[in-house]
Image (cartoon, rainbow, N blue to C red; front, side, top):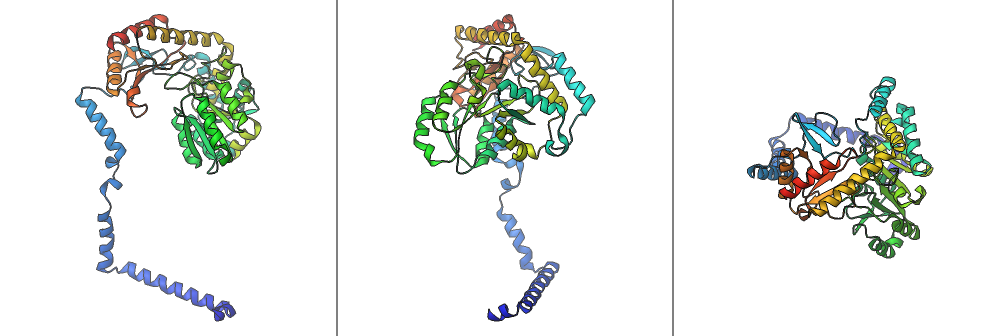
Length: 446
């Protein structure tokens, strides 16, 4: 050791020589491998089960095949991936036939609206079909900022940022802002995108009973002191059940426990509140009562993607460092322009919101009167008809389709088997006659 320290040049030369000799031996072995060396890779290959390198043997695909084959033997057609041949709103065209449609969340009929279409076309003419870059480097367009400014104004907060995917909005935001020393508490019925975001973050995850603010409070009393940042995640309207949380209660809890509160308004924007401004308008709350407002552009706003609205520090942080925004191409100008026009039109036409709320309430009341199990739905655009089994839900959807009604079954594992259902999305364009006809067919088929 002392020699090496005194003669570093010599030591380095010996080291280099040894490395060179070792490399030469490896090259000779590679050029003329022995029979034993040839046998080893074959032996290793034989040890690897085929299902580990064949997609058709993947457990998930095998399960899917079992379900599909079983349904086929029972004479049940696949109810998914129906091909709509035009704009899907309260009515749609499938296979050349017209249907009353309950499988679209085009709540305010903005997708297909002439003004929204014109805005999208004008954006294509001006900016092309893609911004062709991340917004940070050269993908920024005026229409992006106009949309974000309108969204921030809607919530009464500092700023907003839009993402190209609604699912990725939750995944990237939660996954980036929180980490292993943090805790995320969420309603047990929260959307998959939130769960994926929590998994990415590495934070501790704890669900609480659906809409149960007392259960949340009890968990925080016991757990808050063990973590740095704590996030509570709710939905404005729960997309499977059509109910909503008592938001003021949750705000009080988050303030008392010094936690962040995030509300996913995917299904409540345009649906709740007298002007469609969402759950905060419904409860008459200030936008700054909630730390992170999240929503999607694909429902009321007739586009595609998601947004986060809140204080400047939150939005700037995400725009410069959140991977789902930073490393993603910017939203196509036509999509941003369509959502911007839909948002502006929603503000100008509160009567569409009023009609939607009236139709949702009417459908819920008529369904209950007919003895249909609608669960906890409050009639805000989403009304389930709970069947109790996936098989029954699929058969009901097939029978209704044969009578000109398109509604999707929601099956296990998306919901527990006993909670399998048909899920009705109501539009402001549905007439009371259409709703009554649907209820009558559903009642006789059940």
